[in-house]
Amino acid sequence: MNNTVVSAELVKELRHRTNAPMMDCKKALVEANGDIDLAIENMRKAGQARGVKKAGRITAEGSLGVLTDASNKKAVIIEINCETDFVAREAQFQQFVKEVASLSLDKEVSELESLSSLPTKANPAQTVEEYRLELIGKLGENISMRRMHLQKTQGVIATYGHGDANGIRIATVVALKNGTPELAKDLAMHVAAMNPEYIVESEVPQSRIDKEKEIYLTQTREKEVGKPEAMIEKIVENKLKKFVSEISLLGQAFVKEPSVKIENLLKSHKAEVEFFLRYEVGEGIEKKEDNFVAEVMNQARGAVS
Image (tube, rainbow, N blue to C red; front, side, top):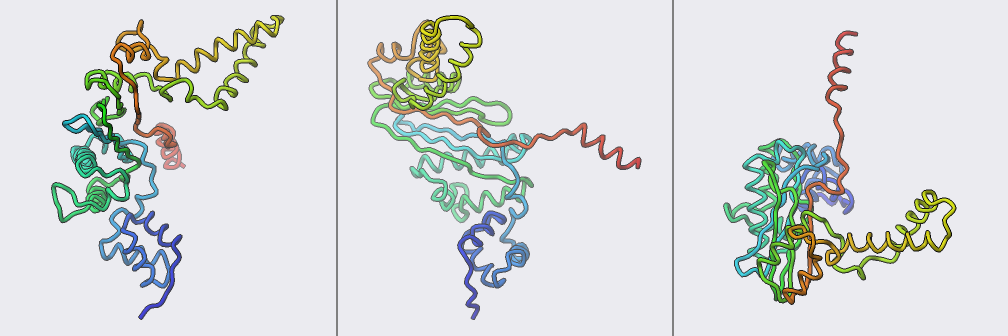
């Protein structure tokens, strides 16, 4: 009997490198006496590491799944990534995104780990994680489920997805109190276009305002040389008001009717915004920039020399 003890960190690293289930990783490490390279080799032979060598690749492309239920009381938004826009537009990849979003909404699952262990609708004998690994093998790219959110409300909820041939690139969820599905849909579209960061101005952290004020003071003093400090302070105060208004949903001009502020639009419907969320594919992920011209030139020079 093999009594080798492996650390949780080593198991986690093997899972990251192979995309295999945690218990399979632990078992493989025990059998390999803690040798991670040998464990990977054995897992590959056993067909357990279909995603190996792809797990470390940057997945900054992909698509969003966004769905609302028939009652307009719950919605889900999920980001699933791949390496290239070529795979993002593949029918098999798009189907995976739709399947996972639909499963999350139906089962009211709000965490990726729980979602990964669920059986799929198309094949109950296969889990979402097994489906993902199978897709990695078929499409030849790393595929990752990055983030998700399930929102429920006693009011009304709506979603909006903006996309192209590569799938949905921007998706939003808006929940309203005392509103209508039509108003929620309009606001979901507005959030996609205008990208507010907060619902109301009072939510903007003072630290954020102080940082902007410092920047505005420096800029204004350089531009308005010789002006009294009181005047400079007034100019900066007006700039700050505009800044806070522009990053707050209620302070923004309605994208479909710019003469109307969102705050007044809501008042006219006697509605309130409970929640909003906006996802954009790849935001916050550092993408690798490839210079294909330079690469070809370097290869050509190498061939000549």
